[in-house]
Amino acid sequence: MLSIGFFVTPESAVIWRGGMASNAIKQLIEDAHWGELDYFLIDLPPGTSDIHLTLISELQLTGAIVVTTPQPVALVDARKGVEMFRNEKVNVPILGLIENMAWFTPAELPNNKYYIFGKDGGKVLAEELQIPLLGQIPLVQSIREGGDEGMPIALQAGHPAAMEFDRIADKLLKS
Image 1 (tube, rainbow, N blue to C red):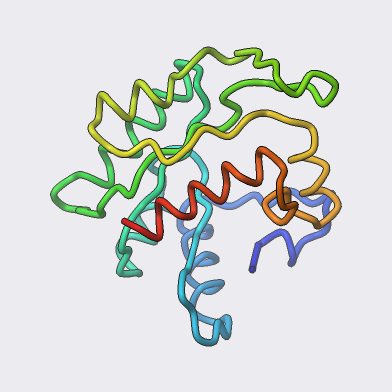
Image 2: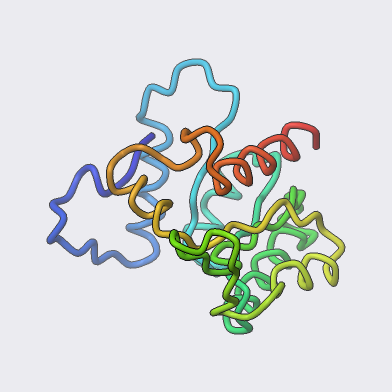
């Protein structure tokens, strides 16, 4: 794993124009010794910025996974991302869509689902764009806590969110 966050203090803002950010991402990718890789995942910000275009031109991407939340404003960005990757000049296959924060489940009521950001927005978008819905990740406190503690929820066998991450990974491996 590599992040620009490893090179700046937590209080520091990284204030770069598109060209500077593009050069930094190229350097992070090219200058790191990655060793033998089975998969190379890059987490991008929403949208269709210089960073996206740089990666598309610099790397042979085998696919893109679009992540969204269910509310309409996020779905607009997700749609743009899908259309960018589908553009004939870009032509990166869409492996699927993941709906993050699909519902809220409090720890004390594990069977309850509260659709804070709307219900099934990512699911509906995936159907509309004819791409696979890889999964719907709930908004649960233990996901945040695990990330903050360096123990991702995906490593906590039996946790419902971990099982959803496993289902997503299985779908990707089969595609």
